[in-house]
Amino acid sequence: VNTGWDFGLSDHMTIWLHQRINFQERLIGYIYGADEDVFYYWKELQKLDHVYGYHFLPHDGETRRIGTARSPDEKPRKLKELLADAGMKNIKVVPRTPDKYTAIQEVRRWLPTAFINPIECKQCIKCLENFKRDWDENNGKFKDHPKHDWAQHGYDGLESLVRGLNAHGVLSDVKPEPVYYTPTY
Image (tube, rainbow, N blue to C red; front, side, top):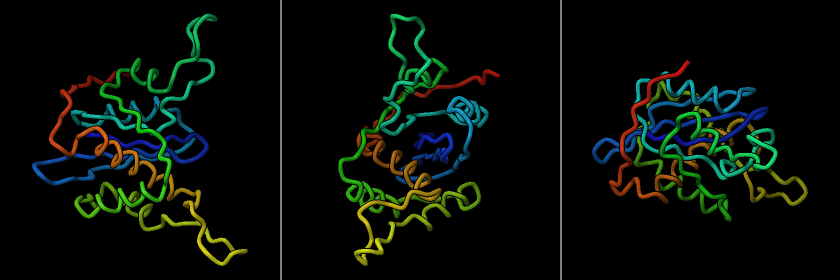
């Protein structure tokens, strides 16, 4: 199972769960919430009965978090380093896209190839149905960027997943070594 993340604290945090079985892409689960740290979500993932492949983090997986240095001589650690220290393997950070419209088209091309579990992914389906651009009243047209709301966070997690799958060759049958997790509570 691969995961695609969008980080949020006061905003929504989203994680898509993906499997590729034979030639079929499957979206098999969706985790979302707010006001929790990423370690909470990592613990929730460990509770699931999955063998994990790649974890595709958005560009802010490369950001440093204040208060995480181990000594005064060390710089604060990156979010991906903190998750690796917590036991996450096969972490891939998907760079920020220079063109959101192109990234949206990449997701649109991929989505029809995927089966979406309608029960486990009920909330993420709502996100995709409600993902839209802001309307510019002054110019009478849609703005060039998506509306910043709960639906965008759900979409952004999917974008991390799809762009990560494409960029890291997962869709071309290159598989990471399976990692079996024993939950640590």
